[in-house]
Image 1 (cartoon, helix red, strand yellow):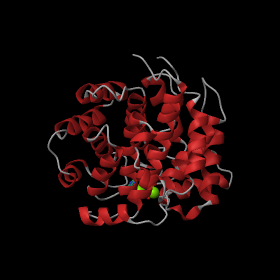
Image 2 (cartoon, rainbow, N blue to C red):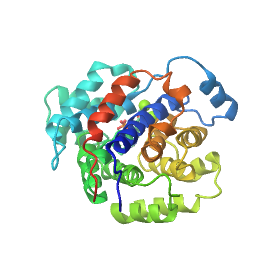
Image 3 (tube, rainbow, N blue to C red):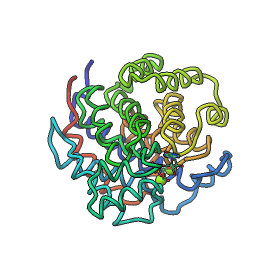
Image 4 (cartoon, helix red, strand yellow):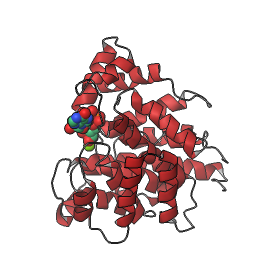
Length: 318
Ligand code: R7I
Ligand code: MG
Ligand code: MG
């Protein structure tokens, strides 16, 4: 399958991916934890001129992106370093709204505990199945060379904070969706059934296959509220990654609409909107993102520069 041919395409797509995550997170942050978000509330947020501030979702995505940018293939993740880098990011700006379990992992890592023990220490020793690993995983799609490679990188990036298998599994379809979208041609309509089939085949896990099957059943009809009722919308991986995927597949060529769909579904809105935006904006590239939102976004220039550094690593074929 042909991949982005010109480096300018890779650059636009990488910028779309990272800025898309950030915009989804920042737009959704105002509504995190709301049961329902009506169209009027969302419109008010879109029309505001205040600075758009992102949360932990973006802070950790950027930390992972920096980690990847500093390393070369074929082993772009060093878990010992990554655990410390993520923890230091939390320490630098602890006010960005981190999950409790992840905060506790970071405290342990900064006290010198090795990441396997630090990550496995929470939630009665089973580790977290929160969506914190899935929400930050998108940049691995920029350096992965195949769906299988990407999900392996996802798993490795996830386990430094999320020891529970479901916390890691959530990052796998999310990363694979971003990879497939990144390497899709936005001029050719996305074959959504085939897309879901490839995700299911790559992740290859019974429970996640059935979650993806539920997404398929909702592709044509579901309102955001009914999708949330069916798929969940909380801060666990299993009850947020499927909703974000649905938001993307409902609007694969329109990042702002995917973000709106995720936010209208309520619940963990910064995270589902960030995860919905990642594949959508990786497909459309930066031009798919509303300039009115981008103009309000904090640190947009730095994020764009980081995306360009990673764009050079996007493989041309797989
Ligand atoms: O996964 P994590 O970093 O959370 C990310 C969320 C996003 O919404 C961010 O925007 C930020 O607000 O936090 O942090 P964790 O605390 O590990 O997991 C998130 C939540 O998942 C927890 O607060 C729990 O509600 C739930 N959870 C669990 N509940 C019961 N048993 C995760 N693991 C368990 C568990 O084992
Ligand atoms: Mg957050
Ligand atoms: Mg959240």
